Amino acid sequence: MLMACTLYISGCDSQCCACPQSSGTASQRPYYRETWRGTMKKILFLPLFKMESGHHKVASALIDSFAQEYPSIQCKKVDLLSFMSPALEKGISHLYLKWIKKAPSYYSRFYKNFFSKNSKLIQKSYESFCLEKMEDLLLREQPDLIVCTHSFSSFLAGKLKKYGVISTPVINIYTDFFINSLWDLDEVDWHFVPSHHIKTQLAETGIPAEKIKITGILVNNEITQRSKRKAFNTPLRILITGGNLGLLRVSNFGESGSYSAEYRVLCGTNVPLYRSIDMKKSPVVTPYSYITNSAKMNELYDWADVIVTKPGGVTISEALRKRLPIFLHSVLPGQEEKNVEYLKATDLVYLLDPHSPMEEQIFTFLQNQPAVFKKHKAAHAYLSELELVTTAEVCHFIEKTILNEDKPGHIAYIDTVFYQLYSKIEN
Image (cartoon, rainbow, N blue to C red):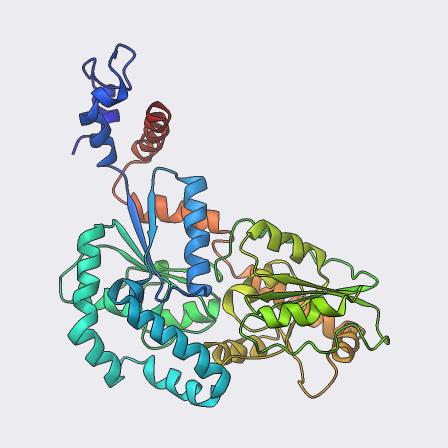
């Protein structure tokens, strides 16, 4: 299909809204408006659940970045399981939250068995139901690019490519520091990985190294990277996150009197936790409810000297970019257990002992300058591995290398200019 901008450059008639000789209104020029829209690229992002997670945060970070860098590219996020069956998604989400609280060890075993290509439950579900629904979704959306931020989405997209149902390019964007065996590695076109060790692991399976980019776990562009470690404040500023699921114990923060510290506690949707802290009216402990604004999170990171959190991929990635010492107060079963294996092996975190006072452990560690320097050096080494440092850089790479692989650079530039021109005319 010819682009509207191509018509203008080659000598369009007076009906083209880009032409100075045009006298009609935008509504009188439907052909050219629709011709332009027909050239717009579309990216479909596929997390799995509706509930907030790292899979959603990574997808949203990339969508926000595309809106800033390439507004002519249409981005859409679909919760794959919600699309397939809203009732099923709601039931599984509810079961998951109950399971990790009541019987974490059983969930851990389930996770290891379920997220495997050899899982009989996976095979039965995709053969009887999921593949057909996935095909329906792609037929409806007609994307130019599929971005999978969850292993199950990648698994289904890989099956459809293998069976010749789709030829759309697919990117795996990994949101943890490991890869479970459900991710498709054979048919997927590109891999955006969290670390060099994952790139090496994928390359050993035969994936070309040029198809693997070390991006870290993507974060919103509002989370600005700190160039060097900051000096610690007095009193020490401690940011505590990960209270959303009710696994955080904060009964005595700031009450010992032995240490000079201020706390800001992110309670998420955990209303009882928020109220219990707020009722104490402590001058050194401030609770926060759920924060969705990345700029506000950036302010909190800039305020903090250290962070106490869980080993969720996105939070750890944000803290590393802010060069904050990272202390882990708890670990969820499943993917967080696997994250901890990598984070401890690379000396990126300090795992707190739940049976010892938290403040004492933090201050004892910070007074050990060689240990602090070792953690700082490990974080610097990790960040030095990144080939695409910011989410904006990832956007540029996708636009130039994947979406416009066969399009000359000046044509891609003209596409963007004309999108902006048509948007102004229609508004």
